[in-house]
Amino acid sequence: MRQRTSTKPCPCCCHSEGGHAVLNVEVARPQIAAYLSAKLSSDDGVEVGPLERITIGHSRGMFRINASYNHKGTTIQKSFALRVEQAGMFGTNTLDEVRTMRAMRAAKFPVAHIRWVEFDPVVIGTPFFMMDWVEGSSGPPNDAALRDYVIKLHQLHEMNWRRKEIPFPRIPSIPLDGVHQQVDRWMEVHRWGRVLPEPLLEEAATWLKRNAPENLQLTLVHGDPGPLNFIHKGDEVQAFTDWEFSHIGDPNEDWLFLGGMRGRGVMEPQAWREYIAETTSHVISKETWAYWDVFNHFKGACANTSALRIFITGANPAPNMAAIGTALKLSMVQHLSAIIGKSNN
Image (cartoon, rainbow, N blue to C red; front, side, top):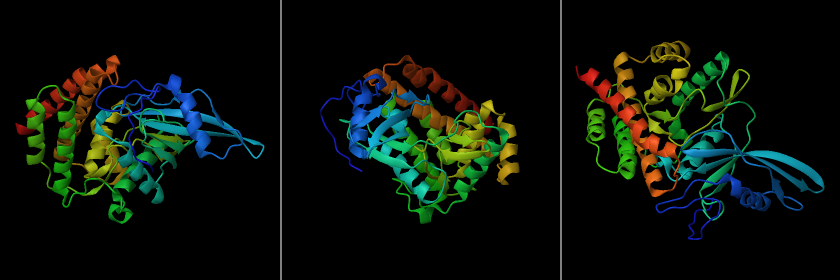
């Protein structure tokens, strides 16, 4: 992997002060074709078809690349998944995500194979990496595929992460440190993105540190689990996706993110709590569920604050950036305030 910087502008992105901007897929195709021509053994270069956006995620842009080239007189067609940073959205970076994914693949966990990583913004204007295309669907799974996903998420939590030597930037020494590190991490993202101090979030951070559960664990946490954050084929999981929030912490952060936020379109939180216990034998008390519900809404509010800065600086002037950084963030702050209020009564 190369990591270097350049002051040369790239025509593929709209730039602003303070970081890389959002990929303009309409003009990036020639640069991607040139990049693949340098990476693949081709007789006369690589042709790339129109880029297909395959998710509507905000922290990363995801595109399918259909490449065609000749090798020793034989025409070869391959598809890759391109994952690009989007102006620092949610305070994540390519290097940490790539390191985790490669460690997970080495551990035989279902993760796409990463082919190339590029940090030089001259190539397409923003850091990115390319993976082998994984056949399957990232749409709503059937019951069997969902169960397989929940079982594998539990297996992720059971993994001996110390033996995997994943180079996380933060490794907690005790379980309580894991909570404090994540609270501090998300406050850093919030302070980076905010316009003015927000006492409610500052108070929520203090509350989370003071009221952490006693039965904490240290496991590998995915950080962004959900019914649409994995690729499945038939009844089985083919690959976990969206590793940018992964870290060492308590597994209940994942279970509440899945059951209390991402998975509400599948079943209600109480049903998720029962489903998780039935499927994995991992029982979550009402008090623990409420705590991690607060944490994940705090995490979401802090992460969404980054969208406001990205909108204001012009890195991504799309109206939804303003909405995420204001209205959506406010709804999460209101929700976590209500939960804290109930917990204190």
